Image 1 (cartoon, rainbow, N blue to C red):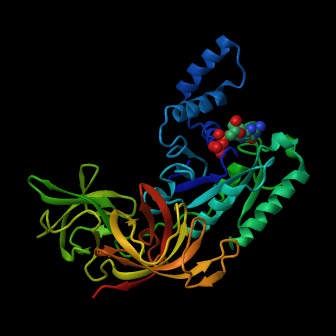
Image 2: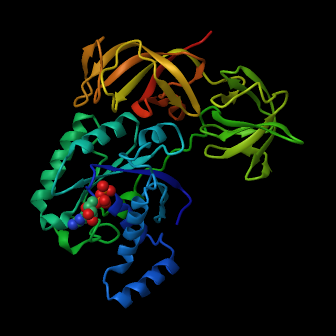
Image 3: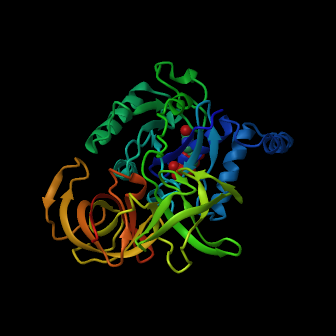
Length: 421
Ligand code: GDP
């Protein structure tokens, strides 16, 4: 076991086996409590059922789904020799894109599940493109349901080459992608090498997960702490709370809140109801800053060092992917942008370039409109001050979701920021 942490996304076309794979991983890594399995084992023995332990995990997941629980397999956790994994929301779930790019559930790496009997399907394409745009590091490709194609090497190679073509199209580095023939349902090449695929001598899934590169903790970047809420606590005063995305906060630091444009010295930092001298990326903290009152700052502000304060954009240029829009998007469109904890109406001032999603090349300069499925570079003007950063400098503060009519319309990342005076 290790305390190195990885956020893992499981992506792929519906019904290709994402949930089953997560269930299998939980089961194989012993992440289902023993007493729970024991109870089910007894029940199953009474009823004379086989394969009960794994079935138990799957029943539980299925039950959650029937109850309409928003996300059935997200936020599940399991550990391998190298890492503690958290499964982050999977595409297809309601708020996946929004969650993925607005913070907590940013995935480090992903497993792409492709059913051997179906090959590359529409959502396979969509998710790969999204993963690429949103900066997922490495991809492990599980060619799943090998049991349904008699564990045939020819079929596996066919699917592998189809997926390789897709990855090349979106310029994903295929040297890094690991392809593995698996059956999530039967357990082949997940935790143990399968005898059914003797022609395969590459890594099995658990090995590939162990060999993922360590996510770099963003401690070298300047402090960026998006404010979630601001409380008044008797005896302390004003306490903004939020999660540190990058950098470190120490007692005594001089900080600045943007766009509210106020600042002061950090007097106390509290985490899990205890005072701490400093806090790091991933820490949820409440803190107190000398001279800052409750009405000086608000949710959506970002706290950073006074000598390297968070950027506030007059305009910014961004690359976006249109997920779903009932008609077309033209210049002047003003939906709500969700970036970290901020929600600000922003006007898409100009459509600069339309990209060909299959090649990543510029398909059209200054297009008149863009629509569902399109990727584009656009210039955006926030209607109220918004703190946001170029994704190349601080990726944690450089992506956003675009929402309108109760839906995520588009997702994107910031290419450059023109700062407000
Ligand atoms: P998801 O929509 O991608 O989460 O797919 P599910 O995990 O719900 O699986 C869809 C269907 O495929 C279910 O009926 C699973 O039992 C089945 N399935 C998943 N993995 C395998 C596999 O490796 N082999 C076989 N034969 N069926 C599978």
